Length: 157
Image (spheres, rainbow, N blue to C red):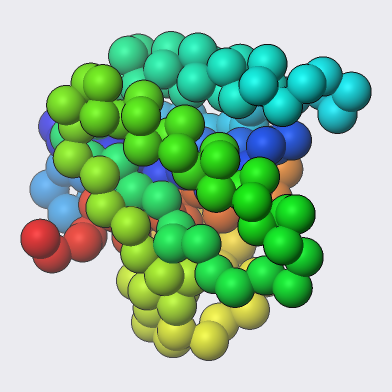
């Protein structure tokens, strides 16, 4: 059964979602977030993300990993640290010779909701429904990552 991982990049909180697809049915295998302490130097936080994300990749051994493209942010400092976290993701994936796709937030919304301008609540509700979960996954970063994982599973290369 093919396994797909979606990642919601962030320095303080990096969401991940793991899904499998078998017979056209999606199943949630795991989700969560990797948190790093605010007072820690950025280099140490990036290393922690790399190690912890590597453990998730090694445990589930996906056939494909997906991340959202960095969209324009007004706060340049925030955009820079998210870009650094994305670099850590790309490195961890490349080190394991895994397939990586990047998609826009609209691509993810279209894949999960059928509407590229869906709001956050609509996406979370569809993630819950598609994966047969009892409640919307928490934290939000994990729910977002599951949406990316679902989009990744259905991405046409």
